[in-house]
Image 1: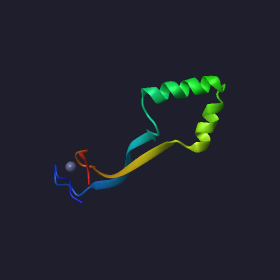
Image 2: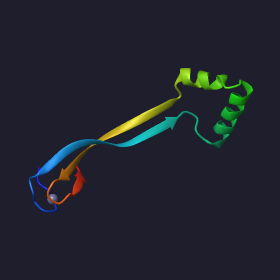
Image 3: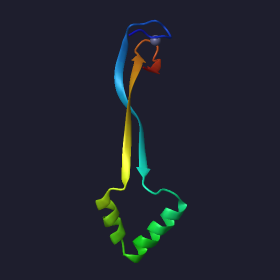
Length: 77
Ligand SMILES: [Zn+2]
């Protein structure tokens, strides 16, 4: 691995978690209102129901990132 900026071979390769996307089923303003209404109606019981169902999905994306120890240049592979 050679740095494209300065040509140094003193490069460390690390795996970084670049993004964590949380995808909720039925996203949108209307669903938010309905959900808030349901939470109020059921005195928070809806939150437990929602948790059990697991409607939200969190996506993690890992990226290999190189960091030059010579010039501190950072780039992804
Ligand atoms: Zn460099």
